[in-house]
Image (tube, rainbow, N blue to C red; front, side):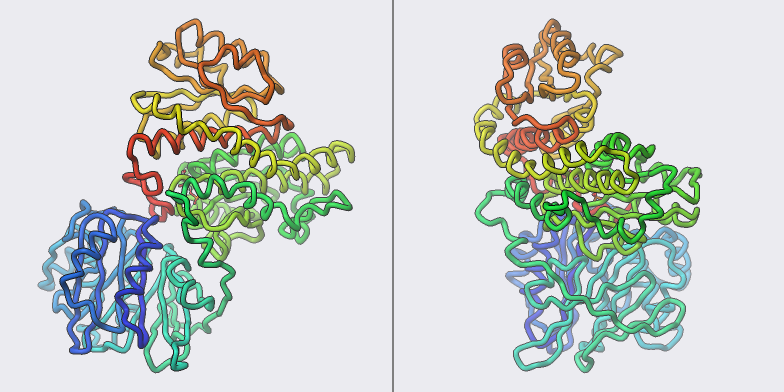
Length: 620
Ligand code: M6R
């Protein structure tokens, strides 16, 4: 949550900061702010509630000059979203300005201590405490900012990514991280001089340089105009050598490419995204699945007693599908845990357990904490992430990237299908190692998995008219999504998608559970979406539909192409091509994504940035 951008170099900072904030707006968008030091050494701070565009409007009448600056887009944690609570925050003397992503857990104690020392506070935030603490430390130790930040952070409990400006020294920025991500871009300007960019992730940086340093936990970095590389020290006073990485992210991937919203673009990108996800992992001639993350740890997987998957939200849904597949194909018991619950239990972990973290962003605080706990208990950690170099990817012993490209829309779409495909590849690769599938079945599954991108394309093209009847559902107050077996998690995902972007209340259930309570909700105003492919438990789902129909519920169904029985029982149907049971979720979820998208846009919702949400949930 919250996005940070920073710049120091010879260019004007403001346009770089604003563009960067727009790119990071998916991380939070309730208020925004910038701070620059002008050539007359004034430290200007401008803030606005609402989106970055509101800040731009405000700044149009202000002095935004300066070649050094920091900026922030906020997702409120402490204090309501208003201009006082928006970042950057200034220190008491006005000499420092600071932006922060994360939560300072002991901020009340620190604030009380600072108040005793004569510091006053204007906001309700933990961030203002941090900037005052740094100034207090600097003054009482009579030290430079770099040292003061390091000393001050030793007293801080919680998570932070911060960037700080000092009015008296317009040639330096200090930044630090613990628990929240921070990336430093190292560029070269037109005159061959080094310039530095700071971002919560690489998206505000990629336009200028592909050379980045991922700051590690408890590291503090100093960037000056005179240096070619940041100076880095950690909280234990040990100097660190900056590790340079080359980004493989293109600017095109970050743009909307003619679509009205990122979400729609990302829904339509799925065929290609999944081709990339599969590419190089299925060895066509040998009909084999090769995941380097497994090859290097074959014995672990061969002897695994149990797999525990920790995840949140949509990633938790894909993990459930992964559980069904891995248990079926590789005969290993799999438990799927909400990371937020797992981290606060005292879970039993055996040394031969494998703990998998599934996370698009690779930054979700609960998931990260869950695997850190599992590691303390001796588990082997495997990461399934999308964002390269993210915290979870780096915290795990091995793993597989889903490689679906940047997902900007807050509602997860292509990451969901990418995670499901990756979990299926993982299940197949383990099955191969353990020889739990016959060669014939293994080859059948591998062949079928490779047809999925084309079948998603087909599904997208045959469900284009969802936008026409989505209008009819804008007045609904509730929705039920129902499925069985592999399609129960799809029902959960369909419901989550609809509620998060349209704000219509929706629930997902295993279809057979209806009669144990939820069926009481059904009347002529209740749309019930059934995932009813002509596979597995088809007849049983038909009976479940009948039960709803006789209570006058409206039936919307996802059916296999050519199906008549369910289509005739339904008020609306979406078609998908036939595939094996285990891969149906990859097709069935497509019309549900489109349904949510079109209902939400018909209601005038901001689908890419729904209210109260953020793309990476880096706070608990
Ligand atoms: O980045 P992660 O996959 O760890 O994120 C987990 C959830 O916050 C995320 O899937 C969330 O539920 C999505 N907004 C759903 O569309």
